[in-house]
Length: 241
Image 1 (cartoon, rainbow, N blue to C red):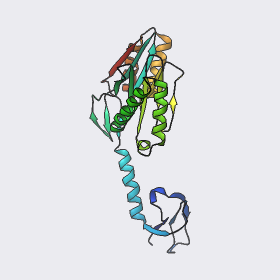
Image 2 (image 1 turned 30 degrees about the vertical axis):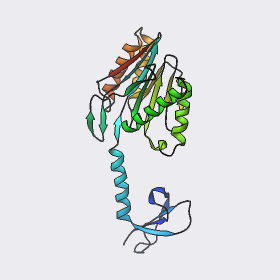
Image 3 (image 1 turned 90 degrees about the horizontal axis):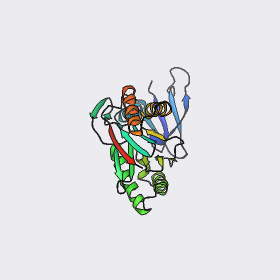
């Protein structure tokens, strides 16, 4: 018995799962995977072996994505500190231990850190710096305009990264879905180890008198002990009030 996948004329990637149909054992139409799409004209068949090889290829590509993680920003007593680890991971092995994921922008008045694809992040850094120049260093306006372009531009919308940006007065998280988030707390973090770093920093803020620099360092150390995509090669940048 030979299985087949029934597709509309659109590509397999655009097809939507519709269900599985089967007739009596031995029937030539047994184990047909039925797909549906928005278009209703034109059909073609695809051998199951070919279809599942495409799925596996996509899974292997996802597995091989470059991961570049854990950035935290902490504010306390007029200090603004941003810290990031240096690990870059490709699939299941480490490519680099000392990557720099934080940059100073607009006359060194603004800090920006990224998590995600490195090439995409540097593209976004350049565009964000252009926005800062356009709006005379207004972080709020520049962040909103970057998020707007990121969401609507056909090229930018495919960039895979998250940004955390800060000046002396504000911190924002920016994503490709159009989100510009101003955290309620004086802590913000992104990346796979971000939640661990935030939890550690929050506990230190509430229970110690440590400065922003010491809190960021300790939070990154704790995140590195938990998250496999985060190491202890920490880069730190600081804005003083």
